[in-house]
Image 1 (tube, rainbow, N blue to C red):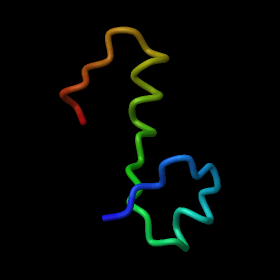
Image 2: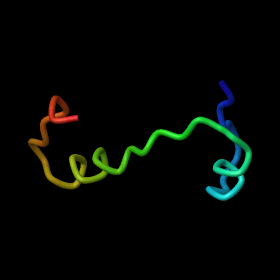
Image 3: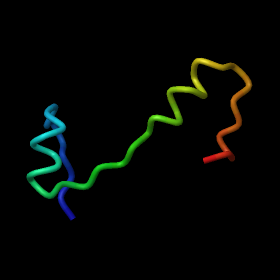
Image 4: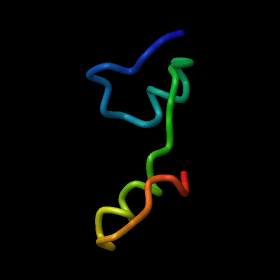
Length: 40
Protein backbone atom coordinates (compact mmCIF):
# COMPACT_ATOMS: atom_id res chain seq x y z
CA UNK A 1 0.00 0.00 0.00
CA UNK A 2 1.47 3.34 -1.06
CA UNK A 3 0.69 6.52 0.86
CA UNK A 4 0.98 9.90 -0.90
CA UNK A 5 3.04 11.58 1.82
CA UNK A 6 4.16 14.98 0.56
CA UNK A 7 2.37 14.68 -2.80
CA UNK A 8 0.08 17.65 -3.41
CA UNK A 9 -1.11 16.81 -6.92
CA UNK A 10 -4.32 14.78 -7.07
CA UNK A 11 -3.33 13.68 -10.58
CA UNK A 12 -0.03 12.23 -9.29
CA UNK A 13 -1.87 10.46 -6.48
CA UNK A 14 -4.36 8.86 -8.88
CA UNK A 15 -1.87 7.96 -11.60
CA UNK A 16 0.79 6.78 -9.14
CA UNK A 17 -1.49 4.17 -7.55
CA UNK A 18 -1.44 5.76 -4.11
CA UNK A 19 -4.09 5.25 -1.43
CA UNK A 20 -6.59 8.12 -1.30
CA UNK A 21 -9.27 8.67 1.35
CA UNK A 22 -11.91 11.27 0.56
CA UNK A 23 -12.54 13.29 3.74
CA UNK A 24 -14.96 15.79 2.19
CA UNK A 25 -17.66 14.90 4.75
CA UNK A 26 -15.34 16.06 7.55
CA UNK A 27 -15.20 19.57 6.06
CA UNK A 28 -18.98 19.89 6.32
CA UNK A 29 -18.89 18.74 9.96
CA UNK A 30 -16.28 21.38 10.84
CA UNK A 31 -18.37 24.16 9.31
CA UNK A 32 -21.55 23.07 11.06
CA UNK A 33 -20.98 22.90 14.82
CA UNK A 34 -22.60 19.92 16.45
CA UNK A 35 -21.77 17.66 13.50
CA UNK A 36 -21.87 14.02 14.50
CA UNK A 37 -18.74 12.10 13.48
CA UNK A 38 -20.69 8.83 13.87
CA UNK A 39 -22.47 9.65 10.62
CA UNK A 40 -19.33 8.70 8.72
